[in-house]
Length: 328
Image (cartoon, rainbow, N blue to C red; front, side):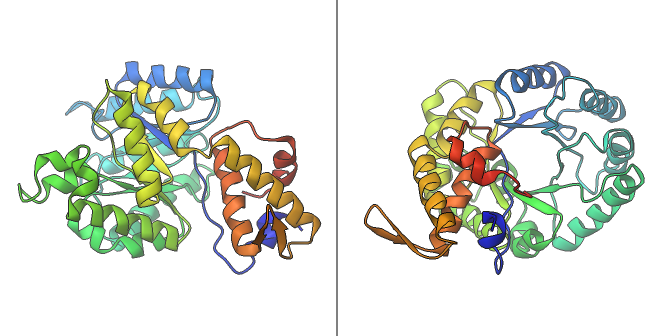
């Protein structure tokens, strides 16, 4: 039996995405990001930004530009999403009406910022689906930014929505929403990992995602010169807060994020060996290197291979054999 069927018969099948989400707003940066993705492969996603990327009063032209780029031959891997304006903004429906009907089959996901509740997200998804279904796209994936008190309070319900596949932590707006009660240093490292209210928000978002098999995406690192800060942030996000994806806001941040958050070669090889042996034993318990493994650990190691595959990492030949026929 294929691992994806054998290991998740009584479990939610988790979502797997590339470990880096690179944001780009201006035409210059969007085109550079696409060129980099063509060069490196789909080891990272790109999010075109209509919210902060569009100049005030020029939202329609920006949305049309995004649509043109999505439909261009430069979108080779179709791993480009779009952050639209927030649901209460007058340009929200305009973004949807201009982008989705023309580029529905090219969009990897839609990002919803500044939400306040699961009900609001569900209503936005219905609006998105009305455009997407007409354009021949079913179940367009939705990513949600958690950056308000209200959204954090309803984070479990938001993560539970079937079409939502990723929750991102919007640290800047979240800290600002405390009106000075949280110091500005908590927007950056090391404060962003140490202030209790910020750490609590990160933990609740990650917990909600893992409860429903969704992907928690860590907030930005504002440091763009010292890449060791980016690497350390990615390490702490992954190992201390259970995040499996992280934003990039500069092309130089992509490599350290991918290298740190993606599965490492040693654990990929170990996962492959254990799963090959388990499959030969029809998924019954086995011993490997003097340790007992069963379906619980098999699910863990299967997740390692899926995350590696999502980030386009070269895998051992037997890993590809395990993944062959996977229904995602």
